[in-house]
Length: 206
Image (cartoon, rainbow, N blue to C red; front, side, top):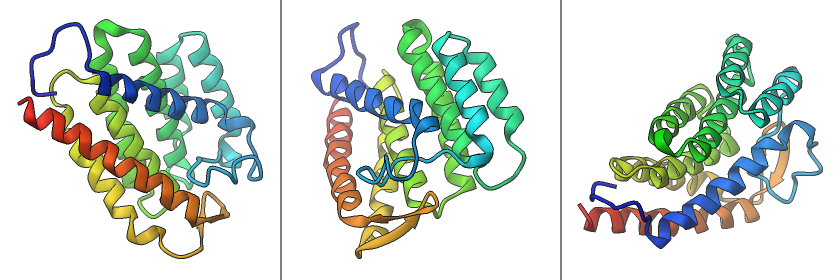
């Protein structure tokens, strides 16, 4: 945040760590999920068929702590084709995991995760699951930073707010499947006050 902090993080920061852990867990298991497994979480990202092998291998490299190799593999697989936004999401998640493991340089890795989240958003701004996950990613970055977090919270808030009108109705197409919007809408509505609270806190501590 813009305030100067000691080595101790405020309680609301640790809540962000939990959010990060959930997001990472979902993405880390994506390669073996099918459409039916994820219907209860309509915002879940589904591995495009052409990227299943790459995603699986990236997970394996991350598990071994070979983060640079995982990122390099992901970048080599990007060929300006549909589904490349998923690879950028995978790269972002790789950096978030690295940030959690490398505390001394966590800010650097978190920011890189934010950069690749933006690439995912720029590449596919119409898919509501992709957009929602970018909002979660920006919140993760804000939670990790001692300075500059407010910038990411503002962006996350804008992302979640942009989804409000798009999550109206009963069903929508996302990630190659039709999903119910009610649980998606509820999840987005729950993220909004969380980000607003983070933004309010870090602004008052400037």
